Amino acid sequence: MKEVSSQALAAVYRGEIRDWAMLGGVPHKIRLIHREKGDSCRRRLEADLPELFPAEGGPPAMTTVTTQATLRAVREYPGALAYGPYPEVLGREYRVLELDGVAPDEPRYPLRNRLYFVWSADVPLSPQAQAFLAFIRSERGQEIIRARGANPVEGENLP
Image (cartoon, rainbow, N blue to C red):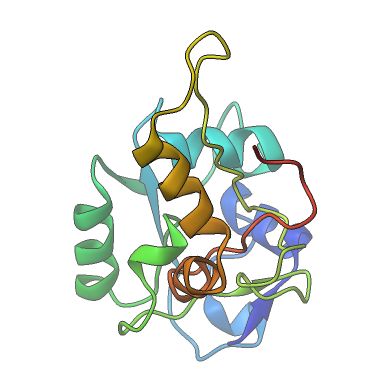
């Protein structure tokens, strides 16, 4: 399988779809793996796709408390479906599904997090901090950001 729609994904999390064959995949029971309540990945999904977390019911799911435990569970349980940070699976034996036809490395992927560099406006940036910001805006810095599965912010004002 290469992709899933957000509607089909919600049906999986409601327990209406319980086998990969119902999504066009190889026949196998889907085993859901959740992160613990309060986890940043789970909070992101709860905010963007609340239908993945039904108030009542839903299929049984395993809960993990670290990214490493989640990835281990995906390896150990055939048919597992989990969520986590994209850079952690790059270049490894995991498949990341496109969502609604959008690949996870595309800026318009619906579940991307934006991360910002923040500092106090009352404190001038040190020369080292200024050099770091210049580096991340450089061509080499942008290459590194892309290589880690992120999309650098373009066109926004950075000091």
